[in-house]
Image 1 (tube, rainbow, N blue to C red):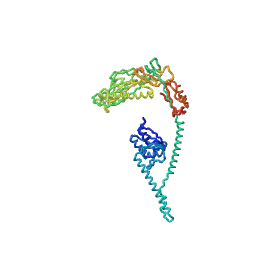
Image 2 (cartoon, rainbow, N blue to C red):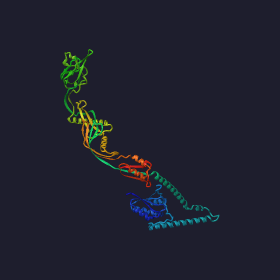
Image 3 (cartoon, rainbow, N blue to C red):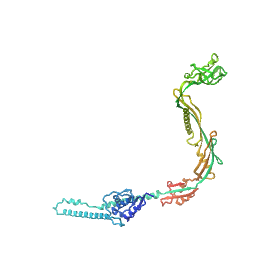
Image 4 (cartoon, rainbow, N blue to C red):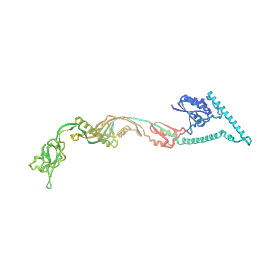
Length: 552
């Protein structure tokens, strides 16, 4: 229900008719349209009564009129009033008298008090008029009493107020002529707009739908290069993406333990003695330039040297060594030539030697920080999470800007190497090194949807997908084969593929009958409706922007 209603009065409708329409209006807000020269304008009391009755009925009243007198009377009664042509509000006047023009009217509601007030106003105005005429006659006699009579009171005759209603009527008539001219111009412009600019055509097309049930097995493999179907199996090309990365994180070593650890490192052992290889058993001693003894951890064979151009070229092999005793004094740089004490006094002593590839570290004896089993477990868990996040970010970058789709469970993450070095006493921290690999089986979901639609569209032409309602089942993955298998079940709905722009271009300027004929000639139409506005329009506009075509 509308919240506002406009009520129109006739010129002869009196107060009783106006009050009746206000009270019986179906809305709480009423716009009362009062015509020019209405009988309601004969008395300001009519508007006070309308104001009182509307408030009693709990309704909001607004007066609308092109008559300035009506607007003024409404303003005096404190009723909101407006001119519908110029959208201007009422002018407030304090001394407004009813019009004296004789107009046929219907009986209006008047109270005894109203009659008494009107009678007092009439006799009061008559007495004032008689007093003015009497004063004027007396002054005139004084002015005309002989040539020797004083003329000082002559100015009083000039100062007598004289009402001049005629100029006011002329101004009002001129205002009305101007208002009528403006109203006529607005009407002409509005007519031109409504006839040439406003017309629109609205076309509504309802297309027939064809729904095809779908139940397929989807087989996605990295070895497939194109979409293919075999019965109820759709083969879709897939991709196996992989990324590898490592990370080292440090954690506080909160525990303490008494340990004895030997320094360790790597020696590069040279054979400059001869072309024959030399075997060295595990724990073979090597002496550093500082006189520290280190032993190789496992047996090795030092290859024979080569002779080129009469010059011996030493061969070499790397071996892990550990200090003979625990302690920090074995944490040495180890720079210089290392010898084998076992060959001392033998020609091999000078033919076999070694060099440290780096410092010897890890020697310790006493109390040092250590990580509890709980700390180790938490550290490995945190490091693995950070490594996984880093790999997932790397995988996102390799998915070519969202081209591929990833199903839940299609990602494989494996830690290929982990190491937890011994905490360093000075830092009281321990590190966790971890290397991992991530693989993802991905495919183009749009390619899959297009393949399912093409499968369902077999045997029909000139249609397009209007609804795709397909649910994928739980997938199974084989990362070694790079394949994904799952089911697809649901339906695909098709409708005619209509070129709406060509249809619109074909009906521009056509009459109503031709438009309706063109609508029903379109393929796959279930129902169609054409409407034109304003009501006198029976041709589609020539402007394409004024023709609206919607499809349901």
